[in-house]
Length: 208
Image 1: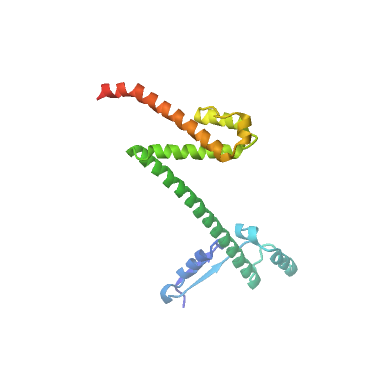
Image 2: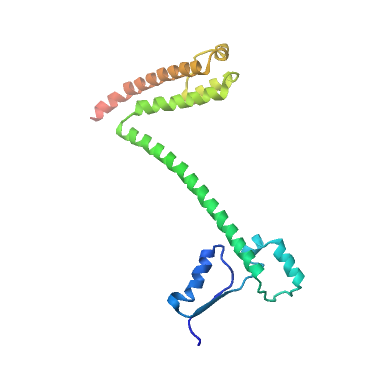
């Protein structure tokens, strides 16, 4: 008896799950139905992943253009192609999750700093830690023969001069260089802070 839903697919999806869902529509809960898929070797899935063995098999059979093929080999080739696409998609999603994890850590770090700044908490500690990280990075990248680059980085980023000469830099350890630069940076920061307070306090007082 005729009846039920007939599913006719004009290509195979990259995901086997989608194909199974379509087949499932044809026979839900024991209802009659049928499904058939027509695939062309010009479909994107086949063009990307059709194996040379399948193409050689078609040449051996001497099939004419447009002639229909029913072969378990072709079916297996399609399923293998779908598996390869799915594996590739899994790898893509895994990398996206890794990138999102890095972005989430960065967001958490930035929002913590923002929270501290808005509430006035740990500002001095955060600034000191950031200066230390910047200075440590400068010294690690220039020690021991990059004094000129170090001096330029310090002036451009922290607006301070190197607290030692080039010869002193060559003969001291990284740790000593970092300590001296950090001390100089803290002194410069304190001077700037005091200057800002001196200039801004009368304005704040007048506003209050």
